[in-house]
Length: 255
Image (tube, rainbow, N blue to C red; front, side, top):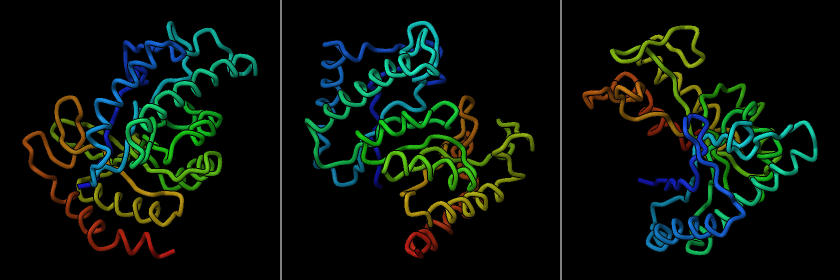
């Protein structure tokens, strides 16, 4: 089965309670990134099922907090924003060059970017200079795909892979109500919502794929297409399977 390998060049996720922002201009960071890339890419550069390499999910690059890259910066001021742009550009440059040093056969996807409120357009524009495909890591509606992701595609000049999508129904572990934007009434409705979303997204020329979140439900990640006993939610799974096996490629090629 094709897959993407996930590096973790930094610990700056938006959900990380103890993030650690590296000094991207330091010799230590360059050596660390080179070590990670070498330890993985040398053995994987001829891997036929590997699509490419991703990085940290939903990075908090613009948050002003102690130790962050944006600490003390007013990003409404051009001078301050230029400082952060320089840091982010260096981060993308060092990580991309390290991967390319040891593997020129696969794609580089970069971080999985969060919604526009946390990922301003200027970051997407810089990302387009370094990555082959952009990853978008969030729950989405078809309208957002048409609006926000079309803009990101234009800014970056890169195709987009939706790397985090899901619709939620209540289970023994999860309680979710109509107020949640991803809510549906039951497992069958989850599968049908996936069908509608995937059919719409795959038709768009700048969308290269859709990844569902997540696979196995547990007491921490309370969402999956399998429950905590490793049993599939068949009403959801069968609807997803029907689209993927019978309609995905014909839909993608319809335009």
